Image 1 (spheres, rainbow, N blue to C red):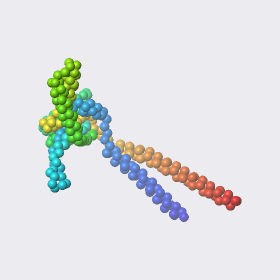
Image 2 (cartoon, rainbow, N blue to C red):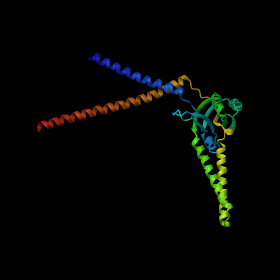
Image 3 (tube, rainbow, N blue to C red):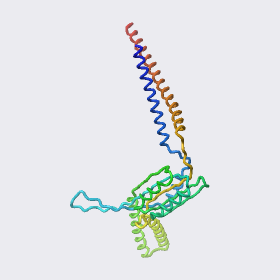
Image 4 (cartoon, helix red, strand yellow):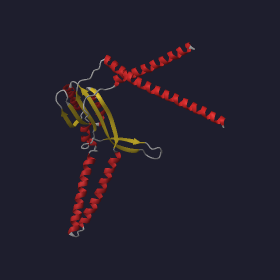
Length: 289
């Protein structure tokens, strides 16, 4: 009996130690993978700029018909592709020079720029328009600069938006043509002035549409790279410090989970005792009846 109890006790202690070790290793690995970033967020600059200027590109391809008697369909896809790169460097001037040279070498254009901060805490935000064929090359070069804190690529299809703008333009041109023909027939001065004002409004709308459609022109094709270079020292944490933090977290969480487990066990045990007592009382009452 005593030997069986000792075996169970050893097995229980072994399982508790294994659980503790798993928690410790998990926290230690998490400490190495976690990125420590004490620099401010720069998303406000890019969100403000994105409402002013957008870059679009196109991709032409053919979709083969499933029916042999029908020809393939030519598709001209319009899309918006944006890369966001946030990197950090302790050698700000060198990395700034390298990023500008990389942008220039790949025929890209800096469309917007913001540089701020004093030495030791400088920030450089660039919105770059790059030809679609050089997009991947520029992205791969820029993520090698400094220590990347965050990066992502987003691609949105804009074909329907382009078609809607074209349809609206054609519709307005037809209305303008009809109004001009109507104006040539003569009439009252009030009606003539009303037609003139309406034609002027339509021409203003057409100008706005012309600007929007101009962004989709093949000669203006660009993809966007939003690049942030932040100045700051790399935070280095020693092995002993990581072990200390991991041990403190493990002890805290281990005791927390064990306490919760003990409370649940005690509550379950008491609940079972109460249920058993109620069953005994019920049986006694049934016998008396």
